[in-house]
Length: 393
Image (cartoon, one colour):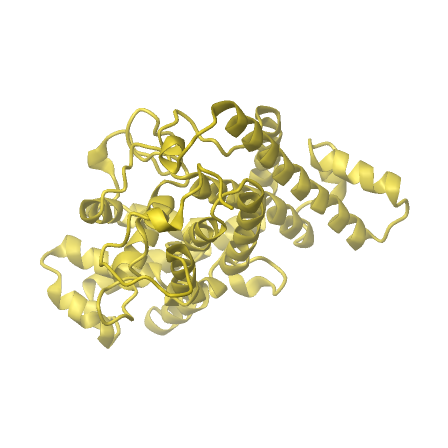
């Protein structure tokens, strides 16, 4: 039984290209399945989360991160009476637009694309699922439901308007990433409102997952130690609790037990806050959630402040650690070399991309084709192409 404020599958606003309903799957289940079977989803296996994918088999990749986000989203959505399949679909799709080398690759492409409409991985994900996945006979893309597309566009909050404040928001609609503007021109995603509660769950699940696994990966990489975490909020109390319950515990088990408690604190906080806010506001439809002046799914203010302290620690000790910075410079050079090379010599793109090259009416259109190709690369393929075409990395 879904709550009244959940997205009801029989009330979906439909798809860009109408399709017959499945006899045994809801529209959101079909979205989830199409995302999992997409080429872009498979490529996440060899895309960076923090560490370049070849640096170690134990570190998270963009794919394992996405699976963890989906697991958290399913748990929270089910507890709150939301549509689990929609929350999972948005979670599985939220990082499809990430280029090789994670945020480092995104930063490089954003600079390179400044003359051509910019680059934003969130908007690129929408471009992938509406244009670049070309497997079906009747349409380009995956032809996902309006609700899934809306969730992909707005899971971090409204993109435009008075409530726009998320990481992908813009102060002026004219500054909207071209990939998002193109999709929104075809199917109005109501970018000035909040997304469904299911999409908000996917967004918070993203925060839960990376806060948890970045601590784990940073410890495994030796960028900091358990002792460094003892003075931080949330992590320090978690280690103290484990030490009291299991004195002398094996170090690896101690680490796991502490970090699973950190994970639990975050999930339980989100659920408790959402239950209180839902009880207070009594929304009677998914649109009532969208019309609110703030997100219904979020951390409590005390935990949010504590997580800011953890993120600040991770930024200094992990994301900007000397070894990571060295690798960032190296892979930035790879992107900075490949993009202008393909722009200057588009004949170097594979044969299946030449029709798009021929259809490009001007340099901006050509740059966007090159972007689609480069952004779709995995870490290893980008490094291999750089070695082949440039002669080293």
